[in-house]
Length: 154
Image (cartoon, rainbow, N blue to C red; front, top):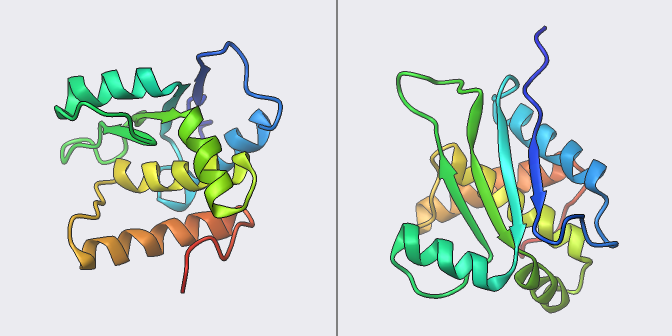
């Protein structure tokens, strides 16, 4: 079996925060891609600040505000298994704030957001209740595959 391309992780601070185990994040992302059927694909991740996410959100979505995660999928009908499935960008301040709101650690929140972003990369969305339910189910399956359960209300 061919080894998948490496995951590209970039921390705007130059290194992950002390509360993040980068190897565990890489392993979780690889598990997410494998579970989604993209064993030979990779992705890139930028972990930045609110200002960076606000700028990206304005540039790419026309929304002039920060957000917790953005995704850009490169999945195309003529290439069902791209080497690079897509790009994700996460706001570290949003990760920390949302982790505190939910009562868990920042790494758990980061992985929750990455599962959400990976679902977007394969074309899922949450604009309708049915789409939201389907996407939530996929996120829960991805998170369970890395030992995180019970993050969403029943």
